[in-house]
Image 1 (cartoon, rainbow, N blue to C red):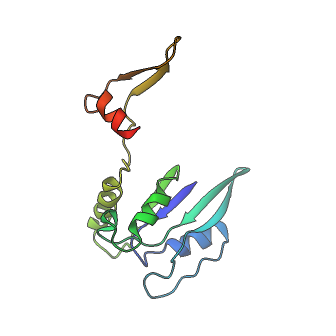
Image 2 (image 1 turned 180 degrees about the vertical axis):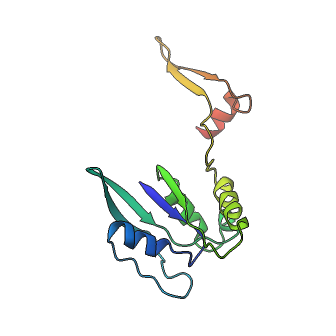
Image 3 (image 1 turned 135 degrees about the vertical axis):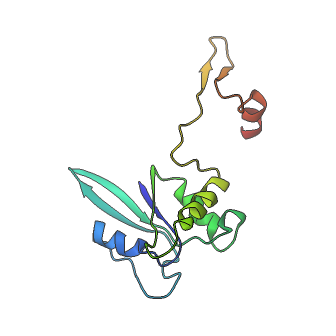
Length: 142
């Protein structure tokens, strides 16, 4: 599953239509796409789901607009494709990355090296090679 993420009116719907043949409404005004539009891409005999997500705005991680809904859907994807407007400054890419990072998405980073193993007599054993992840952090998450 691939999620198309970007600001409004950068070409996400057009890209989805060209890649998958799925009709996703595109117009010259912002926020044309209000819900997630799925499409299916055929690649070397495999089917890959591509999601056209509504545009996010600065402050999405804090709940501005539909940011939380969009980013939570993006979190379910195996890959994120950030779609940018070539006529806008490259700082837009950093803004999108900042919004995703603020919601717990770590783009282009290795996952932390942690492991859980089941003990023979019950319970679990936790090991971490990442100093920032402690047993207390794991307990807070669980």
